[in-house]
Image (cartoon, rainbow, N blue to C red; front, side, top):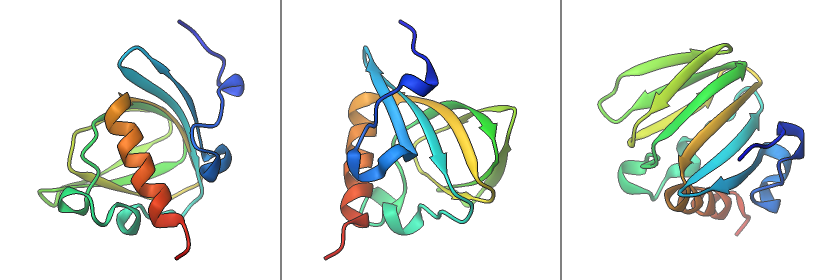
Length: 122
């Protein structure tokens, strides 16, 4: 399978072009585009340990993301770097960022549904 990044469909209309992607077998592929300052901590409240429990493998095309893990460790992923984020993490966008990510599709769908519910008013 192959896809051009610019041709990937929106994953959730509520997220606009922030998350574009498609399912490939048991994995979800995604092109993530988030602005500087976006903090996932409040969006993950209510999940186990208030953290994302879905693993992600990816490549940071541009930007910089601070990742905090359940054990308190932090790391920064910058443009041009590949990453693996195991279950039990949250992220803060330190710069406008765009990255390509692969995740187990069922787990990713659950996380995105939760994030969208937290973004919805009322």
